[in-house]
Structure formats: C-alpha cells, structure tokens
Image (cartoon, rainbow, N blue to C red; front, side, top):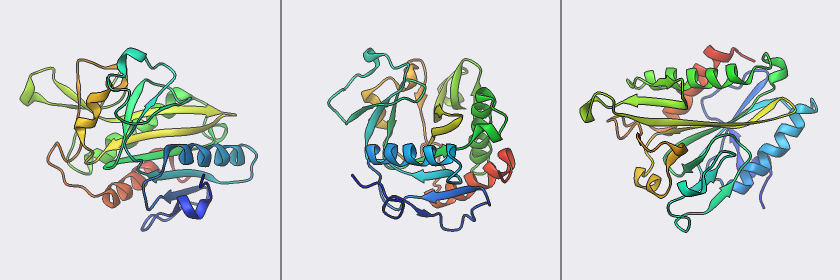
Length: 231
C-alpha cells in the first residue's frame, strides 16, 4: 500500500500554504484505503504536535462509502463499485472522478472545540465557493450538506451538490467534504445518497457551470481563509 507523502500528494499549485495549514493536492486518483492510511497517520501526528494541520484535495476512483448511520437497505447495487465501511458520520455516499474531495485535518483544540460549529463552517465554505461559480447553495436544518433549489422541477424540488462527513479523534478532524464538479451522476443510482430519497443529486456541470478542479481548488482555498482565518 502506498502511503508516502510524495506518492500521494504534492503542494497544491497556485495555492500558497498558510503557516499552520498545509494544503495538498493529489495529482492522480487516490485509492480509498491509501487515503485513509494517509489521514490516520497525519491526524496522529497533528495530535502529537508533530505536524501542521492539513487540507488534502483529491479524487477517488468510483466507490461507495458507508458512514456510521448507514442503512443497509440504502445500498441498492452492492456489486457495482467497491464499498468501504468508514468511521465518519453520515450514511452511504458516492465518490468518483469529477468530484472534488477535501479531507480536512484540523485541530479543534485550537478552533473552539465545537463540532457543530465546525460542520456549519464547512457548509459556509462550500456555499461561498459555489457563489464564485454563480450557484446558490443552501443549508438545511434537518440534513447536513449543501443543497441547490431546482424550481424548473417544482416549487419544492432541490438537489444535493456537496456532502459532509466528519470523524474526530483526540479533537483532530478527518474525512471532510465532497463537492460535485462534473461526476457521472448516474453512479449515484446504486445507493440512496445520504439516506435522502425525496431529493436528487446535482453538480456544477449539471447546473451549466463548466468549472475545472483547479478553479474550484483556488476558490475553496480563498473561502476557507475567509471562514476559518489563516489558522
């Protein structure tokens, strides 16, 4: 299993790292187990005071993950893609090419120790990033993530464009967010995404915005600094 820093990630082009938060970007698709191993090692190092906080931008090959609240009945096509059990919060979700994942490894001891506030801040980052591409994202009190209204389908129609799933160990966070840039949305048909049956899933491309991963990365970095500060 490859788990070295150089093989999995390099400093993100055009994204200057802050003094305490290191931003990394993986140049290729990252196998899920390798990503978990990287996060486990980095979180342990952060908790021990041996490494800076880190935000890692990447994409996975097509796969499904099951959070701690996953309902087995929501896995409609168990043989379609690999399925990974994970300790993050939430239910089933899809990861794959065209989806920007930000694995967020931050020390909540230094950031107020409030997990709910942290999740809300991640939603703020996503909503502000979407606004840079002309998309209005919204939060919902009864469901985590970021949602987009689809009035062309009806007054109450909306789709999910970004998911959030967090795990915390020794008050250091890992896992993070997934933002749909241009994934194959049909791949979501193998699960009930996040356990929500009454709404769909969308992406920037589906909404008519042809953003590149590099453009999204720059926007995420800028919006993160606005919401969290330099660290």
